[in-house]
Length: 321
Image 1 (cartoon, rainbow, N blue to C red):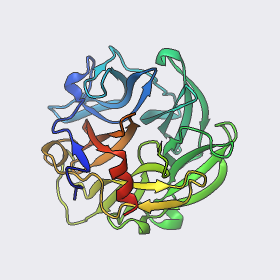
Image 2 (cartoon, helix red, strand yellow):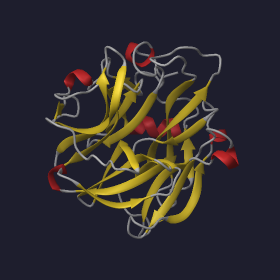
Image 3 (cartoon, one colour):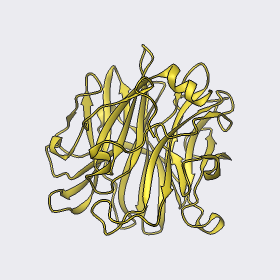
Image 4 (cartoon, rainbow, N blue to C red):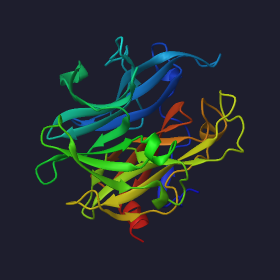
């Protein structure tokens, strides 16, 4: 399922696991990653508990930094907790830097549904200024790294159970003048447009700008009800792939090209044999380096954080054969 080794290279081991975290941790995955002031910064999801006993207690977010984007050191304690009588947990962070300011998108599980939020990160990642939180049910939001036609733009995945049927979710785009009020919503990509998805799709890492268009990863889910036990739970019926597409620079709701096969599929042992939910690939960060290398950070098996690399021109060619 993977592209050739010339096009994309996976690191054979995870770059961050619960063993690297200096506080209670079990599942380290679905991280947002960006370059901030010349340093690599990772904001990761930690479902903490006892990995060996396969027991989970809750979720928090952790921060890690790196000089090369490969070797990471986690901070001494979790960060950015949002929890009250209404909000159960905050998770799946995505980082975007716009004009030197760091923003994160995140998901919130609440008493009344799943909501997507956007926040401005305070200096040194010491706290958050919440700018907006969506109505239920919406999640997997990612911001474009610059305004387009004078407006902020985000990709998102509403969850319209009644109108589309369970898990028939697509990728949408919305615009905002100020990161608070969102509208002008348009469909970008439907499940039916992705040959390797029969269940749902959604945004993954924030897009990166190339001269050809916005290079954009997405997650795509294939459901097979004949599947049995694949992880900690009694059964796990789904396989998650990473896909890639190219969006128009001026009209980002327009898909210029789409790779018809998965960019990254579960193949390595930590992607298929061990972990909470095996056969899950979920990109959360993508960095385009000055030399044309693209670093793609992804969660595997909802358990560990991993890295794959490719050349930007190769990725564009996959979208525009």
